[in-house]
Length: 155
Image (cartoon, rainbow, N blue to C red; front, top):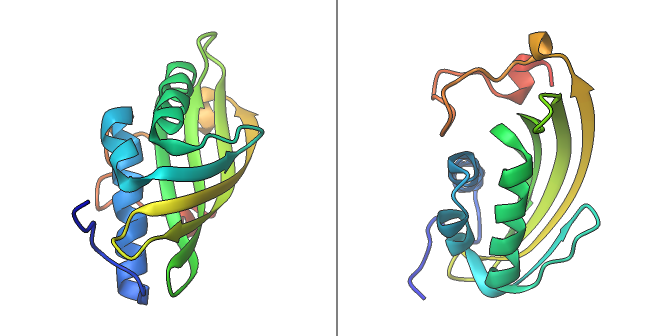
């Protein structure tokens, strides 16, 4: 496997860069692209699901983005040390009935020496919102650089 910089041990700058790269990738909603940042034997906890390995993670992401429509995500660095990063995140999406949600969560990530994520532990809470309460209005895809982050939005 080729290295996926930035590599651990992380600094404030490289941890923030890794977080933004993850946010940008997830905002593509492309499971083929997203899964490439994880080790072949990656281990996850996402709500009540525990996928292991790239194939299970890929299947998870396909299901996720088939259900969570018009998904837009913002991640923010919370803490880091050595080969681990903690983030908080918020994303907005709607279901096939048109109900909008704002999902708030935290993730703990562990990376190998080549910069691939070995473990991802996520805790997420969904809050139904009205379409008029949405805060993430950029075109589908990565968040524009000038769009405020979570702290600036008061989230």
